[in-house]
Length: 121
Image (cartoon, rainbow, N blue to C red; front, side, top):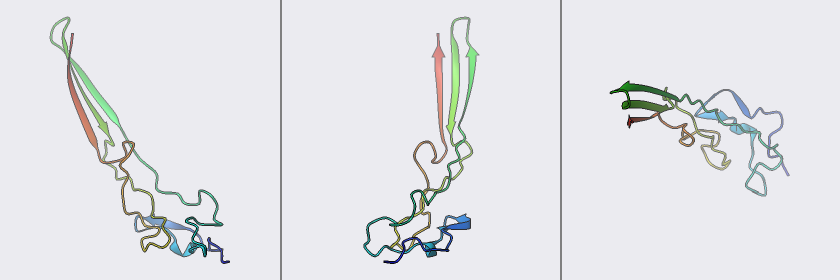
């Protein structure tokens, strides 16, 4: 049985890009096709990190002593940073080790802005 993690070959790329995040030469398909990298350690692959800058701005305008108008703007991913998804880990796929998507969950997707206007009395 040949090893699933090729010995002596670095699995990480020195300057990873979305087209080459992992080194495909460092992995071989297991003979028994068990659906995972058989003798490779747990957690050997890491995807790109997530950068998210959120902010909120608000201003209260007084109409009289008891009534005011409150304006708020809340932004998620304020600088609209593209957060790459996880690399393809299907070893039989031609895009193995490539990132073909972006993150969309947990406020890591495209910039969103929510504005509110409240009458406070």
